Length: 253
Image (tube, rainbow, N blue to C red; front, side, top):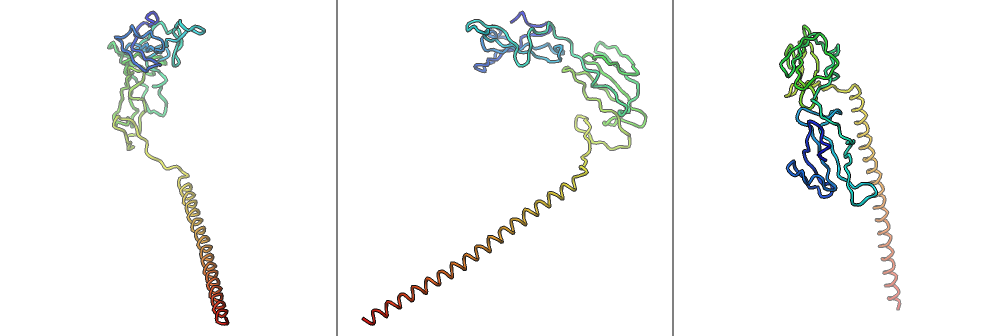
């Protein structure tokens, strides 16, 4: 287990898949228990060659044996682990300048060691952690935070902060979030009116159908009511004739 620790990485913890018990860095002597998943984490500002920060290894039983354990990769981790973590870098693809960005071909690159360079064009290479790129807007343009220039820096997780979003015309009113991120205006879809009309039509048809159904049911119920009244009247008349007949028979006796 210890022999697998890459350079610039450490055993940061373990978790039992059987009991969900967790073990911290001071409990390394319990990491190698059966069922434990051990985390190998790169040091701060380092990551693995695949740009991930953690690898996971599980203590499992060797196939076909019930009392011999072995280490296996877990949750996508492949063994053997990389020999070393490498310094964090940010990708050129995330800061590649497009024509629509309205940015001048004039960049100031500042590195963590204090050196600074001026470039007419960004180089397609990885940029080390803490590298800062300053870009200038073309004349008549500004950033969404209403400044003529913008600094973006390579953060410790390998991403540029803030993201590069180009420059816009000075006379445009632009909405930004509290973090300075551009918030595009809400635009109603071209077909929104047609969709709304269709929805309203469906609702009207549904309500009319309910009304017609209720009227049909009401008409049927009224017809049944009158039929019942007529039947009750006939029954009452029949009973009345029967009583009268009985009275006449008694009178004759």
